Image (cartoon, rainbow, N blue to C red; front, side, top):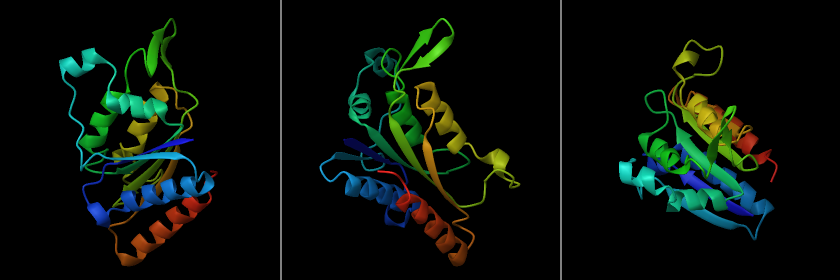
Length: 186
């Protein structure tokens, strides 16, 4: 098994998405002690934004890592209602025509349907369906679209939200998310 672990939070050790993505990766590694594991920190080693040259090149190191992974773990905080630009840049290097999707007679076809993707989302407020701020949530929804486009139609999301509403709500949200991590199938 090959595990690719992506982090995109700017908060370092204070990051809930990093805490949760690390717990997910640890859970998977406990189930597969001989797994190949690679961690990519998009803050420590920023992914360049797309240019015409990079689009035309197609293949790149980020794409190769993604394609080699059986399971991808993504730590994704909600910043200004969506994913960090660093994570969007990573997706831009992974969504490549002819490699992760192609156009068919019926439209786009994802080429990586068997890849498992687990996303740890951290949100300071409450954006869950039914909340007043649900229409403002564009991180999980965007990642579902991007992943679905390349064929990952069943991504798994572990969400911790309300993290900025005080110590007790933060602790409760992290405890609930941690329980979901421990319940993950390895």
